[in-house]
Image 1 (cartoon, rainbow, N blue to C red):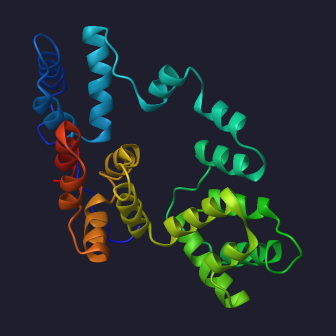
Image 2 (image 1 turned 90 degrees about the vertical axis):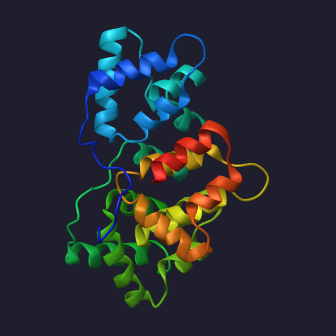
Length: 259
């Protein structure tokens, strides 16, 4: 999607057995060598970390939990089941659709489909009494980002209104917040994540979960570009912002991933 740059690429001299032995040595015995563990895991691609996880379990019969497994261990409940139990209506439909990864991940743009979707969104919102939320949910959770960008441009031409302004006037509450987040992410993902990182470090306390999710999740996609966007918008480097808001091993891990 455009000229975006990651901070992590596959480690050229990757040796999975050497890595798992080093991690094992660093995590057993008297004290834990956090620096070694951070240095290894923060400089391996996601595919390499998966290989480390599998090899570690096979050799030591001691699993490294993945995110979903950790959620179930802590909460004794499936994430999708929690969403279905704790939400309702179109918010639940939207979140479950996102969790099921229904979005087209290609970079293809179908102009005819963009025109069709723009018309559907207009007819589902501004052109009727009440809002057909299911139409908004389906399009925003199924179309790839480039396709959505084309749709939003046609929508503005068709209606004379920016899609964000239309959502602001047509939707309410949590559902509106979800729609706005999805649209902002589709329009400019790197700016969206820069804003989320900044918000996670403002106010009382630091939202460490958000920092981990974005920095680790985008490290092999566009984190280098997000860093540039953060500096452009907030006039401070992301590294300096993290250094002032975080501490200890947590800070060292995030800084290592930033490079």
